[in-house]
Image 1: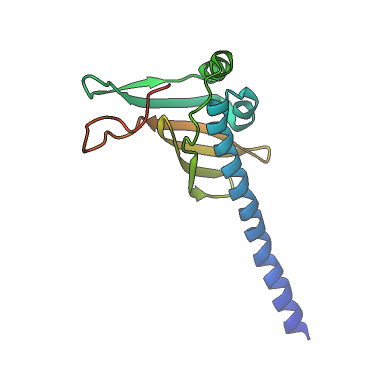
Image 2: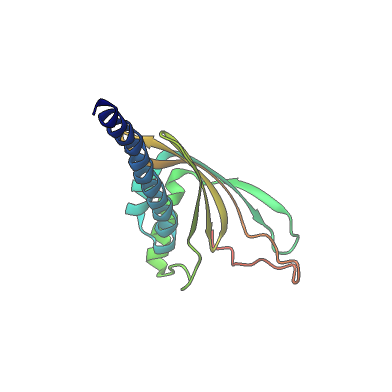
Length: 158
């Protein structure tokens, strides 16, 4: 009887981290969607709950005439300004705009995610702060030019 009890305790101990990992994966996905939807909808509340104010966001956009990439930073106040402009101008993301979230790795304290949106691809680094997953770093680029046309796959709205 004792071996059966030990086996049951062992199975329970193994299941608990799995449940925690499932919860973490769902929370990381939600933070990533809040990030995209915050920009798409102009919803600053979603940005505030998913992004740390000390976020470091840097990206590369491609010049339409020269095809040359140029890098630029986007500080936290610009996140909120962008969201406000979406609302003021009533210019949400186009219907059917992509909202793809690919979890690359989720550990107990940190996570890496690739998101694809109409503006391009962002790589997000998240950390858990007081039990809440939040974005701390972002590296992005505009869409890769189409081989057939040499044009971009999506409009630049950043």
